[in-house]
Image (cartoon, rainbow, N blue to C red; front, side, top):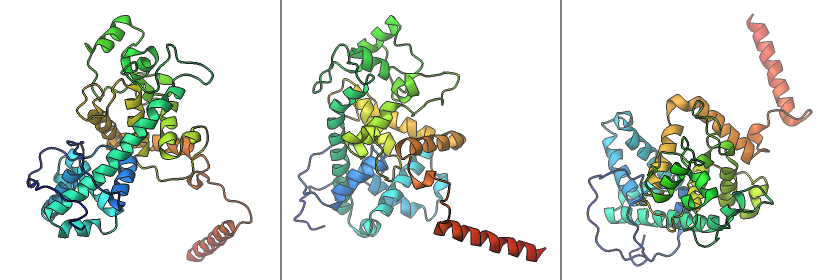
Length: 342
């Protein structure tokens, strides 16, 4: 990238990794013109990994590639393996990026990371801005109204300050109808960590402590949030056109959670939303090998709900089609080969 496009001040060397790159770092506003890296950051932040410190991710990833010549990735801790997977997805998704990073100076690596981060941050800001108003339409069944009414532009009356949003954000395992619990959540006396998942993640906002997987990540409000972000606001009641979902529904989940909260500005240091911990705790579950069967069922549920007409879900073949004839011919040839072998 030419030096006259972005004039950057000197940066401190980042040869030592201080914490995971898969957490948002300090946000620095920088005047940069829109370019393909910014646009790719918007896409990557929405569909692959939502919360990321891109300069640190790239710098750590390049250093790790050298280390992997002597140390297998399996020997790294789980959080580092996740970080490396995200890094490889990023460089594989943008032609020529890995070559540019490996051959470039450290300042260029940081610049690329800041441009990607600018795109991801912009997408996150756009989504939370539009969802702030849209989410109000999904809080109660159609035809009903939220009582007391909620402002579309001011969030201070949301979160645990309102009966409806409080019930949705109440951690699974706590009873929102209990006056003492409700008051503790409102006052902050009961601190909610990100890994205490809210009720709105569950179908019908019902959590079964004996079956904690039952209904998890299968709520209607998550479907609405996904469609609103990745297709258009009007598609909430329609099937969206096909797209590669990846971790996209997790981005919608995070955005919906923030929209329900009383926080006015998204921040990784916000102790109220604890977004980093929330996001990573969900990923920890979905990437746990012991949960493969449940996760596969969850992915299929999402495919059926979001893309009911997807070709991957249609198993029957039309009669007299070219595909059916090919399959029939293959079956006949295989049957003859089997008969000849015996």
